[in-house]
Amino acid sequence: MSNHNPSPSPSQSQSQGQGQGQVQQAIPRAIQQTIPIVQLEPGGGKIHFREQKGDFQRLRTRLNSLLVCLFLFIPFLNYQGHQAILFDIVQQQFFFFGISLWPQDFTLLAWVFIIAAFALFFVTVFWGRVWCGYLCPQTAWTFMFSWIENRIVGNSNNRKALDKAPWSLAKFRKRLAKHSLWGLMALLTGCGFIGYFIPARELYVDIFSFSAGFWVTSWVWFFALCTYLNAGWMREMMCLHCCPYARFQSVMFDANTKTVTYDAARGEARGPRKRKQETQLGDCVDCNLCVDVCPTGIDIRNGLQYECINCGACVDACNQTMEKFGYPLNLISYASENQLKGQKHVIWRSPRFLGYGAAVLIMLIILGLDMRSRSEIQLNVIRDRQSLYRETLDEMIENSYRLKIRNKTQQDREYQLQLGGNPQYRLLADARLLIHAGEQLDYPITVQAPSAALDTSRQTIDFIVTDMDMDANGQAPSVSQSSSFFSH
Ligand code: SF4
Ligand code: SF4
Image 1 (tube, rainbow, N blue to C red):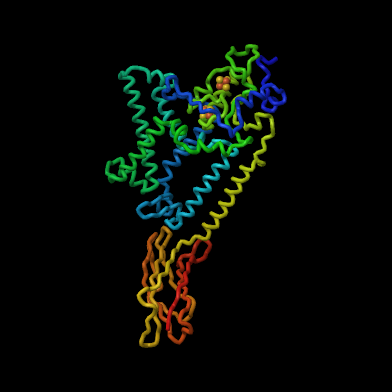
Image 2: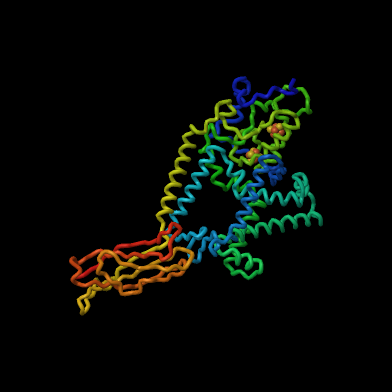
Protein backbone atom coordinates (compact mmCIF):
# COMPACT_ATOMS: atom_id res chain seq x y z
CA MET A 1 0.00 0.00 0.00
CA SER A 2 1.20 3.47 -0.83
CA ASN A 3 2.51 5.46 2.07
CA HIS A 4 0.97 8.70 0.85
CA ASN A 5 -2.20 9.96 -0.71
CA PRO A 6 -2.78 8.26 -4.04
CA SER A 7 -1.49 10.86 -6.44
CA PRO A 8 -3.76 11.40 -9.37
CA SER A 9 -1.90 11.79 -12.60
CA PRO A 10 -2.91 14.75 -14.71
CA SER A 11 -5.32 12.50 -16.54
CA GLN A 12 -6.74 11.19 -13.30
CA SER A 13 -7.12 14.46 -11.54
CA GLN A 14 -10.21 15.53 -13.41
CA SER A 15 -12.01 12.23 -13.26
CA GLN A 16 -11.54 12.00 -9.53
CA GLY A 17 -13.30 15.29 -9.10
CA GLN A 18 -11.19 16.26 -6.13
CA GLY A 19 -8.67 18.90 -6.93
CA GLN A 20 -10.24 20.15 -10.11
CA GLY A 21 -11.34 23.26 -8.29
CA GLN A 22 -7.88 23.55 -6.82
CA VAL A 23 -6.34 23.31 -10.26
CA GLN A 24 -8.60 26.06 -11.49
CA GLN A 25 -7.80 28.16 -8.49
CA ALA A 26 -4.06 27.58 -8.19
CA ILE A 27 -3.29 27.32 -11.90
CA PRO A 28 -5.49 29.81 -13.64
CA ARG A 29 -5.87 29.97 -17.39
CA ALA A 30 -2.49 30.56 -18.91
CA ILE A 31 -3.51 33.85 -20.36
CA GLN A 32 -4.48 35.14 -16.93
CA GLN A 33 -1.68 36.66 -14.96
CA THR A 34 -1.51 36.27 -11.23
CA ILE A 35 -0.60 39.21 -9.08
CA PRO A 36 3.16 39.56 -9.42
CA ILE A 37 4.81 37.87 -6.50
CA VAL A 38 8.51 38.56 -6.31
CA GLN A 39 9.92 36.85 -3.30
CA LEU A 40 13.12 38.59 -2.55
CA GLU A 41 15.16 37.41 0.37
CA PRO A 42 13.72 38.46 3.71
CA GLY A 43 14.31 42.17 3.94
CA GLY A 44 14.12 42.61 0.17
CA GLY A 45 17.78 41.78 -0.47
CA LYS A 46 19.55 39.96 -3.24
CA ILE A 47 18.30 36.54 -4.31
CA HIS A 48 20.88 33.85 -3.63
CA PHE A 49 19.42 30.91 -5.48
CA ARG A 50 20.72 27.40 -4.88
CA GLU A 51 22.65 25.59 -7.55
CA GLN A 52 20.60 22.67 -8.79
CA LYS A 53 21.53 19.52 -10.69
CA GLY A 54 19.21 17.52 -12.90
CA ASP A 55 18.21 16.78 -16.48
CA PHE A 56 16.89 20.25 -17.30
CA GLN A 57 19.83 21.98 -15.64
CA ARG A 58 22.24 19.78 -17.59
CA LEU A 59 20.47 20.74 -20.81
CA ARG A 60 20.41 24.42 -19.86
CA THR A 61 24.10 24.43 -18.88
CA ARG A 62 25.11 22.79 -22.15
CA LEU A 63 23.03 25.14 -24.26
CA ASN A 64 24.24 28.19 -22.32
CA SER A 65 27.89 27.07 -22.61
CA LEU A 66 27.47 26.52 -26.34
CA LEU A 67 25.88 29.95 -26.70
CA VAL A 68 28.68 31.72 -24.78
CA CYS A 69 31.40 29.84 -26.71
CA LEU A 70 29.77 30.61 -30.06
CA PHE A 71 29.36 34.27 -29.11
CA LEU A 72 33.04 34.59 -28.16
CA PHE A 73 34.58 32.48 -30.95
CA ILE A 74 32.49 33.35 -34.02
CA PRO A 75 34.32 36.69 -34.53
CA PHE A 76 37.57 34.68 -34.92
CA LEU A 77 36.14 32.61 -37.77
CA ASN A 78 37.57 33.51 -41.16
CA TYR A 79 35.95 32.76 -44.48
CA GLN A 80 37.62 33.40 -47.84
CA GLY A 81 40.29 35.50 -46.13
CA HIS A 82 37.83 37.76 -44.27
CA GLN A 83 36.22 37.70 -40.86
CA ALA A 84 33.18 35.48 -41.52
CA ILE A 85 30.66 37.71 -39.69
CA LEU A 86 31.40 41.40 -39.44
CA PHE A 87 29.18 44.49 -39.32
CA ASP A 88 31.79 46.87 -40.69
CA ILE A 89 30.53 50.26 -39.53
CA VAL A 90 33.35 52.22 -41.18
CA GLN A 91 32.76 50.68 -44.62
CA GLN A 92 28.99 50.41 -44.03
CA GLN A 93 28.98 46.76 -45.00
CA PHE A 94 27.84 43.55 -43.38
CA PHE A 95 29.93 40.48 -44.19
CA PHE A 96 28.31 37.11 -43.68
CA PHE A 97 30.26 34.06 -44.85
CA GLY A 98 31.29 35.46 -48.23
CA ILE A 99 28.13 37.51 -48.73
CA SER A 100 28.51 41.29 -48.52
CA LEU A 101 25.41 43.23 -47.62
CA TRP A 102 25.23 46.95 -48.19
CA PRO A 103 22.82 49.45 -46.64
CA GLN A 104 20.52 48.97 -49.66
CA ASP A 105 20.43 45.20 -48.91
CA PHE A 106 19.32 45.69 -45.34
CA THR A 107 15.77 44.66 -46.19
CA LEU A 108 17.25 41.14 -46.10
CA LEU A 109 18.45 41.71 -42.55
CA ALA A 110 15.06 43.14 -41.65
CA TRP A 111 13.48 39.91 -42.97
CA VAL A 112 15.88 37.84 -40.87
CA PHE A 113 14.93 39.75 -37.69
CA ILE A 114 11.21 39.56 -38.44
CA ILE A 115 11.47 35.81 -39.11
CA ALA A 116 13.44 35.36 -35.86
CA ALA A 117 10.72 37.23 -33.95
CA PHE A 118 7.93 35.11 -35.44
CA ALA A 119 9.95 31.92 -34.85
CA LEU A 120 10.19 32.99 -31.20
CA PHE A 121 6.40 33.50 -31.07
CA PHE A 122 5.92 30.09 -32.72
CA VAL A 123 8.11 28.37 -30.11
CA THR A 124 6.42 30.33 -27.30
CA VAL A 125 2.97 29.01 -28.28
CA PHE A 126 4.31 25.48 -27.95
CA TRP A 127 6.90 25.67 -25.15
CA GLY A 128 6.13 28.93 -23.32
CA ARG A 129 9.15 30.97 -22.29
CA VAL A 130 11.65 28.27 -23.10
CA TRP A 131 13.79 30.90 -24.89
CA CYS A 132 14.17 32.81 -21.60
CA GLY A 133 15.22 29.75 -19.63
CA TYR A 134 17.58 28.12 -22.08
CA LEU A 135 18.85 30.53 -24.72
CA CYS A 136 18.45 34.12 -23.56
CA PRO A 137 21.88 35.78 -23.09
CA GLN A 138 20.65 37.40 -19.87
CA THR A 139 19.99 33.95 -18.38
CA ALA A 140 23.21 32.45 -19.77
CA TRP A 141 25.40 35.22 -18.36
CA THR A 142 23.51 35.34 -15.05
CA PHE A 143 24.01 31.61 -14.50
CA MET A 144 27.66 31.92 -15.55
CA PHE A 145 28.29 34.72 -13.04
CA SER A 146 26.40 32.79 -10.39
CA TRP A 147 28.54 29.71 -11.14
CA ILE A 148 31.69 31.81 -10.56
CA GLU A 149 30.22 33.11 -7.29
CA ASN A 150 29.44 29.56 -6.18
CA ARG A 151 32.98 28.39 -6.83
CA ILE A 152 34.53 31.30 -4.90
CA VAL A 153 32.09 32.06 -2.09
CA GLY A 154 30.22 28.76 -1.78
CA ASN A 155 26.58 27.71 -1.81
CA SER A 156 23.60 29.99 -1.21
CA ASN A 157 23.90 29.73 2.58
CA ASN A 158 27.60 30.69 2.42
CA ARG A 159 26.76 33.61 0.17
CA LYS A 160 24.04 34.88 2.48
CA ALA A 161 26.37 34.49 5.47
CA LEU A 162 29.15 36.38 3.70
CA ASP A 163 26.75 39.20 2.86
CA LYS A 164 25.89 39.58 6.53
CA ALA A 165 29.43 39.05 7.88
CA PRO A 166 31.44 42.12 8.95
CA TRP A 167 34.36 43.11 6.74
CA SER A 168 37.47 40.98 7.27
CA LEU A 169 40.51 39.97 5.23
CA ALA A 170 38.80 36.69 4.20
CA LYS A 171 35.66 38.53 3.08
CA PHE A 172 37.76 41.09 1.18
CA ARG A 173 39.74 38.31 -0.56
CA LYS A 174 36.58 36.48 -1.64
CA ARG A 175 34.91 39.65 -2.84
CA LEU A 176 38.05 40.71 -4.72
CA ALA A 177 38.38 37.30 -6.43
CA LYS A 178 34.69 37.23 -7.38
CA HIS A 179 34.57 40.76 -8.78
CA SER A 180 37.90 40.30 -10.60
CA LEU A 181 36.60 37.20 -12.37
CA TRP A 182 33.26 38.89 -13.08
CA GLY A 183 35.20 41.87 -14.46
CA LEU A 184 37.35 39.64 -16.67
CA MET A 185 34.29 37.82 -18.04
CA ALA A 186 32.58 41.17 -18.58
CA LEU A 187 35.62 42.52 -20.44
CA LEU A 188 35.77 39.41 -22.64
CA THR A 189 32.05 39.86 -23.34
CA GLY A 190 32.61 43.53 -24.25
CA CYS A 191 35.44 42.53 -26.63
CA GLY A 192 33.31 39.69 -28.00
CA PHE A 193 30.45 42.05 -28.77
CA ILE A 194 32.55 44.80 -30.33
CA GLY A 195 34.42 42.06 -32.27
CA TYR A 196 31.31 41.80 -34.45
CA PHE A 197 31.74 45.45 -35.49
CA ILE A 198 35.48 45.87 -35.93
CA PRO A 199 38.02 43.15 -36.89
CA ALA A 200 38.20 40.93 -33.79
CA ARG A 201 41.79 39.73 -33.98
CA GLU A 202 43.23 43.24 -33.92
CA LEU A 203 40.66 44.33 -31.33
CA TYR A 204 41.72 41.84 -28.66
CA VAL A 205 45.43 42.63 -29.22
CA ASP A 206 44.76 46.38 -29.06
CA ILE A 207 42.54 46.20 -25.96
CA PHE A 208 44.84 43.95 -23.93
CA SER A 209 47.95 45.89 -24.98
CA PHE A 210 46.18 49.19 -24.12
CA SER A 211 46.80 50.50 -27.64
CA ALA A 212 43.18 50.71 -28.85
CA GLY A 213 41.80 54.12 -29.80
CA PHE A 214 39.56 56.15 -27.50
CA TRP A 215 36.21 55.22 -29.08
CA VAL A 216 36.96 51.50 -29.41
CA THR A 217 38.17 51.36 -25.80
CA SER A 218 35.11 53.31 -24.62
CA TRP A 219 32.66 51.01 -26.38
CA VAL A 220 34.36 47.84 -25.12
CA TRP A 221 34.35 49.12 -21.54
CA PHE A 222 30.78 50.36 -21.88
CA PHE A 223 29.56 46.87 -22.89
CA ALA A 224 31.78 45.29 -20.25
CA LEU A 225 30.19 47.52 -17.61
CA CYS A 226 26.68 46.67 -18.88
CA THR A 227 27.52 42.94 -18.67
CA TYR A 228 29.00 43.27 -15.19
CA LEU A 229 25.96 45.15 -13.91
CA ASN A 230 23.39 42.98 -15.72
CA ALA A 231 24.78 39.55 -14.91
CA GLY A 232 26.40 40.38 -11.59
CA TRP A 233 24.00 42.80 -9.96
CA MET A 234 20.74 43.28 -11.85
CA ARG A 235 20.15 39.61 -12.74
CA GLU A 236 16.44 38.77 -12.41
CA MET A 237 15.60 42.50 -12.19
CA MET A 238 16.28 42.75 -15.93
CA CYS A 239 13.73 39.99 -16.59
CA LEU A 240 11.21 41.37 -14.13
CA HIS A 241 11.37 45.07 -14.93
CA CYS A 242 13.18 45.68 -18.23
CA CYS A 243 12.40 42.82 -20.62
CA PRO A 244 9.36 43.57 -22.81
CA TYR A 245 9.03 39.92 -23.84
CA ALA A 246 8.18 38.98 -20.25
CA ARG A 247 5.24 41.35 -20.44
CA PHE A 248 3.63 40.29 -23.69
CA GLN A 249 4.54 36.59 -23.94
CA SER A 250 1.33 35.59 -22.16
CA VAL A 251 -0.63 36.90 -25.17
CA MET A 252 0.79 33.96 -27.15
CA PHE A 253 -0.17 31.36 -24.57
CA ASP A 254 -3.18 29.14 -24.94
CA ALA A 255 -4.48 26.07 -23.12
CA ASN A 256 -2.01 23.84 -25.00
CA THR A 257 1.11 25.87 -24.18
CA LYS A 258 3.58 23.95 -22.05
CA THR A 259 4.90 25.94 -19.13
CA VAL A 260 6.50 25.03 -15.85
CA THR A 261 3.48 24.16 -13.73
CA TYR A 262 2.80 22.82 -10.28
CA ASP A 263 0.18 20.06 -10.19
CA ALA A 264 -1.84 21.47 -7.31
CA ALA A 265 -4.43 18.70 -7.50
CA ARG A 266 -1.71 16.22 -6.68
CA GLY A 267 0.47 18.33 -4.41
CA GLU A 268 -2.12 19.85 -2.06
CA ALA A 269 -2.61 19.80 0.84
CA ARG A 270 1.09 20.31 1.22
CA GLY A 271 2.95 19.61 4.43
CA PRO A 272 6.16 18.21 5.87
CA ARG A 273 6.45 14.56 6.83
CA LYS A 274 9.04 11.85 7.34
CA ARG A 275 9.98 9.47 4.58
CA LYS A 276 7.71 6.41 4.29
CA GLN A 277 5.28 8.04 6.75
CA GLU A 278 1.58 7.30 6.17
CA THR A 279 -0.22 10.59 5.56
CA GLN A 280 -3.38 12.03 4.09
CA LEU A 281 -1.45 15.01 2.75
CA GLY A 282 -0.74 15.68 -0.93
CA ASP A 283 2.61 14.95 -2.52
CA CYS A 284 4.20 18.35 -1.78
CA VAL A 285 6.36 17.85 1.30
CA ASP A 286 6.85 21.61 1.59
CA CYS A 287 10.64 21.29 1.41
CA ASN A 288 10.81 24.74 -0.24
CA LEU A 289 13.54 23.53 -2.63
CA CYS A 290 11.57 24.76 -5.64
CA VAL A 291 11.72 28.28 -4.20
CA ASP A 292 15.36 28.05 -3.12
CA VAL A 293 16.58 27.17 -6.62
CA CYS A 294 14.45 29.73 -8.45
CA PRO A 295 16.63 32.45 -10.03
CA THR A 296 13.71 34.90 -9.99
CA GLY A 297 12.75 34.06 -6.41
CA ILE A 298 9.16 32.99 -7.03
CA ASP A 299 7.10 30.12 -5.67
CA ILE A 300 5.70 28.26 -8.66
CA ARG A 301 3.10 26.67 -6.36
CA ASN A 302 1.29 30.02 -6.44
CA GLY A 303 0.44 29.46 -10.11
CA LEU A 304 1.78 30.80 -13.38
CA GLN A 305 3.64 34.06 -12.88
CA TYR A 306 5.18 36.34 -15.44
CA GLU A 307 8.46 36.24 -13.48
CA CYS A 308 8.93 32.55 -14.32
CA ILE A 309 11.56 32.16 -17.04
CA ASN A 310 10.84 28.43 -17.54
CA CYS A 311 14.39 27.43 -16.61
CA GLY A 312 13.22 24.12 -15.14
CA ALA A 313 15.35 24.41 -11.97
CA CYS A 314 12.28 23.86 -9.78
CA VAL A 315 11.32 20.82 -11.89
CA ASP A 316 14.71 19.22 -11.20
CA ALA A 317 14.62 20.23 -7.54
CA CYS A 318 11.13 18.82 -6.98
CA ASN A 319 11.93 15.61 -8.87
CA GLN A 320 14.91 15.17 -6.55
CA THR A 321 12.56 15.44 -3.56
CA MET A 322 9.98 13.13 -5.14
CA GLU A 323 12.69 10.52 -5.71
CA LYS A 324 13.79 10.76 -2.07
CA PHE A 325 10.24 10.21 -0.86
CA GLY A 326 9.52 7.50 -3.43
CA TYR A 327 6.71 9.52 -5.02
CA PRO A 328 6.02 9.74 -8.77
CA LEU A 329 8.08 12.39 -10.53
CA ASN A 330 6.82 15.60 -12.16
CA LEU A 331 4.81 17.20 -9.39
CA ILE A 332 6.28 20.27 -11.05
CA SER A 333 6.69 19.74 -14.78
CA TYR A 334 6.44 21.28 -18.21
CA ALA A 335 2.73 20.80 -18.75
CA SER A 336 -0.11 22.58 -20.49
CA GLU A 337 -3.35 23.67 -18.92
CA ASN A 338 -5.16 20.99 -20.93
CA GLN A 339 -2.74 18.30 -19.74
CA LEU A 340 -3.37 19.26 -16.13
CA LYS A 341 -7.10 18.99 -16.74
CA GLY A 342 -6.53 15.54 -18.18
CA GLN A 343 -7.46 16.71 -21.66
CA LYS A 344 -5.65 15.83 -24.85
CA HIS A 345 -2.65 17.98 -25.74
CA VAL A 346 -3.37 19.04 -29.32
CA ILE A 347 -1.06 21.88 -30.22
CA TRP A 348 -1.67 21.29 -33.95
CA ARG A 349 -5.19 22.64 -33.61
CA SER A 350 -4.07 25.86 -31.97
CA PRO A 351 -4.79 28.77 -34.36
CA ARG A 352 -1.83 30.71 -32.93
CA PHE A 353 0.57 27.80 -33.47
CA LEU A 354 -0.61 27.31 -37.05
CA GLY A 355 -0.70 31.07 -37.72
CA TYR A 356 2.84 31.76 -36.51
CA GLY A 357 4.12 28.59 -38.23
CA ALA A 358 2.56 29.64 -41.55
CA ALA A 359 3.92 33.18 -41.17
CA VAL A 360 7.47 31.87 -40.57
CA LEU A 361 7.22 29.54 -43.56
CA ILE A 362 5.93 32.25 -45.91
CA MET A 363 8.59 34.72 -44.79
CA LEU A 364 11.33 32.11 -45.23
CA ILE A 365 10.16 31.56 -48.82
CA ILE A 366 10.15 35.33 -49.47
CA LEU A 367 13.63 35.65 -47.96
CA GLY A 368 14.87 32.76 -50.13
CA LEU A 369 13.46 34.39 -53.27
CA ASP A 370 14.91 37.75 -52.26
CA MET A 371 18.34 36.15 -51.77
CA ARG A 372 18.15 34.38 -55.13
CA SER A 373 17.34 37.60 -56.97
CA ARG A 374 20.15 39.49 -55.24
CA SER A 375 23.07 40.39 -57.51
CA GLU A 376 26.74 40.67 -56.53
CA ILE A 377 27.11 43.57 -58.99
CA GLN A 378 25.38 46.88 -58.55
CA LEU A 379 24.95 49.15 -61.56
CA ASN A 380 23.60 52.66 -61.65
CA VAL A 381 23.48 54.63 -64.93
CA ILE A 382 23.16 58.42 -64.84
CA ARG A 383 22.86 60.45 -68.05
CA ASP A 384 25.05 63.51 -68.50
CA ARG A 385 22.83 66.44 -67.59
CA GLN A 386 25.03 69.06 -69.30
CA SER A 387 24.09 68.18 -72.88
CA LEU A 388 21.41 66.03 -74.47
CA TYR A 389 23.69 64.93 -77.31
CA ARG A 390 26.65 66.10 -79.41
CA GLU A 391 27.10 65.89 -83.19
CA THR A 392 30.57 65.31 -84.60
CA LEU A 393 32.00 66.43 -87.97
CA ASP A 394 31.81 62.90 -89.31
CA GLU A 395 28.03 62.75 -88.65
CA MET A 396 28.21 60.74 -85.49
CA ILE A 397 25.93 61.38 -82.50
CA GLU A 398 27.45 61.18 -79.03
CA ASN A 399 25.75 60.78 -75.63
CA SER A 400 27.58 60.81 -72.29
CA TYR A 401 26.79 58.80 -69.18
CA ARG A 402 28.23 58.21 -65.76
CA LEU A 403 28.21 54.57 -64.61
CA LYS A 404 28.48 53.64 -60.96
CA ILE A 405 29.48 49.98 -60.74
CA ARG A 406 29.95 48.32 -57.37
CA ASN A 407 31.70 45.02 -56.81
CA LYS A 408 29.68 43.59 -53.89
CA THR A 409 31.87 40.52 -53.49
CA GLN A 410 34.81 40.18 -51.13
CA GLN A 411 37.31 39.56 -53.99
CA ASP A 412 38.72 41.79 -56.75
CA ARG A 413 36.75 41.16 -59.94
CA GLU A 414 37.12 41.89 -63.66
CA TYR A 415 34.02 42.95 -65.56
CA GLN A 416 33.04 43.33 -69.21
CA LEU A 417 30.90 46.33 -70.18
CA GLN A 418 28.64 45.85 -73.22
CA LEU A 419 25.97 47.93 -74.95
CA GLY A 420 22.63 46.73 -76.23
CA GLY A 421 19.58 48.15 -77.96
CA ASN A 422 21.12 49.24 -81.29
CA PRO A 423 23.95 47.26 -82.90
CA GLN A 424 25.50 50.56 -84.12
CA TYR A 425 26.24 51.84 -80.62
CA ARG A 426 29.99 52.15 -80.03
CA LEU A 427 31.62 52.57 -76.64
CA LEU A 428 34.37 55.20 -76.51
CA ALA A 429 35.94 53.81 -73.34
CA ASP A 430 37.67 50.72 -72.08
CA ALA A 431 35.16 47.84 -71.84
CA ARG A 432 37.28 45.74 -69.41
CA LEU A 433 37.12 46.99 -65.85
CA LEU A 434 38.91 45.83 -62.74
CA ILE A 435 37.08 46.70 -59.54
CA HIS A 436 38.53 45.91 -56.15
CA ALA A 437 36.57 43.97 -53.52
CA GLY A 438 33.71 45.98 -52.08
CA GLU A 439 34.59 49.09 -54.08
CA GLN A 440 32.51 51.25 -56.38
CA LEU A 441 33.84 52.48 -59.72
CA ASP A 442 32.64 55.87 -60.90
CA TYR A 443 33.04 55.54 -64.68
CA PRO A 444 32.24 58.40 -67.11
CA ILE A 445 31.75 57.11 -70.67
CA THR A 446 30.71 58.30 -74.09
CA VAL A 447 28.63 56.27 -76.55
CA GLN A 448 28.63 57.03 -80.27
CA ALA A 449 26.25 56.00 -83.07
CA PRO A 450 26.06 57.00 -86.78
CA SER A 451 23.36 59.60 -87.32
CA ALA A 452 21.90 57.52 -90.19
CA ALA A 453 21.39 54.52 -87.88
CA LEU A 454 19.08 56.48 -85.55
CA ASP A 455 15.56 56.63 -86.93
CA THR A 456 13.98 58.25 -83.83
CA SER A 457 15.21 61.11 -81.67
CA ARG A 458 15.15 58.93 -78.55
CA GLN A 459 16.27 55.35 -78.53
CA THR A 460 16.76 52.83 -75.77
CA ILE A 461 20.29 51.89 -74.82
CA ASP A 462 21.14 48.98 -72.50
CA PHE A 463 24.27 48.85 -70.36
CA ILE A 464 25.28 45.30 -69.48
CA VAL A 465 28.02 44.56 -66.94
CA THR A 466 29.17 40.93 -66.83
CA ASP A 467 31.48 39.35 -64.27
CA MET A 468 34.36 37.60 -66.09
CA ASP A 469 34.40 34.86 -63.42
CA MET A 470 31.81 32.10 -63.55
CA ASP A 471 29.68 31.56 -60.47
CA ALA A 472 29.18 28.16 -58.79
CA ASN A 473 26.54 27.24 -61.42
CA GLY A 474 28.96 27.89 -64.31
CA GLN A 475 27.19 31.10 -65.28
CA ALA A 476 28.68 34.56 -65.58
CA PRO A 477 26.68 36.88 -63.29
CA SER A 478 25.59 40.10 -64.99
CA VAL A 479 23.36 43.10 -64.44
CA SER A 480 21.88 45.52 -66.93
CA GLN A 481 20.17 48.87 -66.86
CA SER A 482 18.43 50.78 -69.64
CA SER A 483 18.72 54.46 -70.41
CA SER A 484 17.97 56.76 -73.37
CA PHE A 485 20.13 57.72 -76.30
CA PHE A 486 19.10 61.10 -77.80
CA SER A 487 19.70 62.49 -81.27
CA HIS A 488 18.09 65.19 -83.45
S1 SF4 B 1 9.55 28.96 -11.14
FE1 SF4 B 1 10.89 27.28 -11.76
S2 SF4 B 1 11.05 27.42 -13.98
FE2 SF4 B 1 10.21 29.36 -13.22
S3 SF4 B 1 12.02 30.67 -13.00
FE3 SF4 B 1 11.65 29.72 -11.02
S4 SF4 B 1 12.90 27.86 -11.04
FE4 SF4 B 1 12.79 28.57 -13.15
S1 SF4 C 1 10.16 21.11 -4.34
FE1 SF4 C 1 8.29 19.98 -4.70
S2 SF4 C 1 7.90 19.03 -2.72
FE2 SF4 C 1 9.37 20.64 -2.33
S3 SF4 C 1 8.10 22.41 -1.80
FE3 SF4 C 1 8.46 22.53 -4.00
S4 SF4 C 1 6.67 21.48 -4.88
FE4 SF4 C 1 6.73 20.91 -2.72
